[in-house]
Amino acid sequence: MAGGKIRKEKGAGAGKSNHFQGGIPFHKSKGQHILKNPLLVDSIIQKSGIKPTDIILEIGPGTGNLTKKLLEAGKSVIAVELDPRMVLELQRRFQGTPFSTRLKVIQGDVLKCDLPYFDICVANIPYQISSPLTFKLLSHRPLFRCAVIMFQREFAMRLVAQPGDTLYCRLSVNTQLLARVNHLLKVGRNNFRPPPKVDSSVVRIEPRKPLPPVNFKEWDGLVRICFNRKNKTLGSLFRQKTVLSLLKKNYETLQALQLTPDGLSDDKEMAECLSALGNTLGDMSVDADESKDDDDDMEMDDGDAKSSDFKDKVLGVLKSGGYEEKRSSKLAQEDFMHLLSLFNKAGIHFS
Image 1 (tube, rainbow, N blue to C red):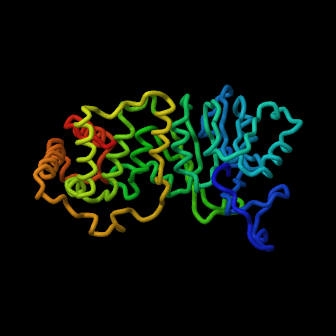
Image 2 (cartoon, rainbow, N blue to C red):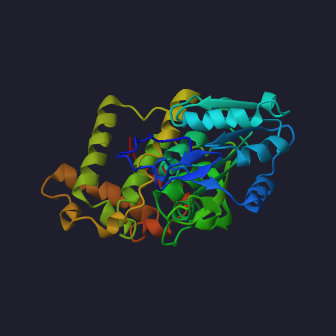
Image 3 (cartoon, one colour):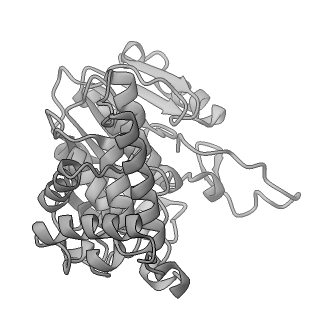
């Protein structure tokens, strides 16, 4: 409940369909769906593996049903909440209790806040911020131990999808590059008040330590091309005029300047790159394979000798690794890393 924009309710009767807890109306338009099943809350706490010494980050605490259990399990809780009404309710609920000194409430948009140190994140979030929040957490430094988050079920299934799965996509590849992701449990919509229109899933995300030795700008450039149409062969994708023109421009610029893409100089730059991996990844619409026009498949005109030579160079890289007839939908992390290294060795870069 702590991210995204709060929209003003329109019309005098706008609040009639709102659900209440403790006299506070919840609005679906703001992503406010409160867990009402205490057994489910207990299960999430148990699966989170919270230690008594842990500082816990909770995103969207609402009225504090999960917050109370987190305070009982850990050392302290940092709760980020956008809705000022919920902040007041949270403070009232724990005022005068032994928990009051162990709860810090930050009012604001979690996507814009500077997050303090935490050991573990446990959250039931607004689903519209799933992708940017996931990559904001993964770019946070110092790295946390794990995050246990409630997502819309289809988004969660994309996070954990493996090569060959229908939902395997850029989101799957980029998330699993940075973290180990496991599905913990499915949650039916009737466990919430008010119930959302979709089922949910709880996912455990453990950042990889250390991160894989790749240039994340280059990685993102390669993966974007590969998943533009994930079920086409890589040979077909890299024959496209737009792809070859982009790579040729990068190649000629770097050759002229006798440069290679810079590494990441500091934690801030790395955090920006990691956050960028989440851009547009939350789009749950139809895959590009089914929505692109045939005009995008135009191949590079071989009439230009330089263009023809560069095209042969690109296709030669694919052939050398045995990737020309392979499809992105079937490639694993190791395949993409190997392919990127082959391109880079040939002087071909994606940033």
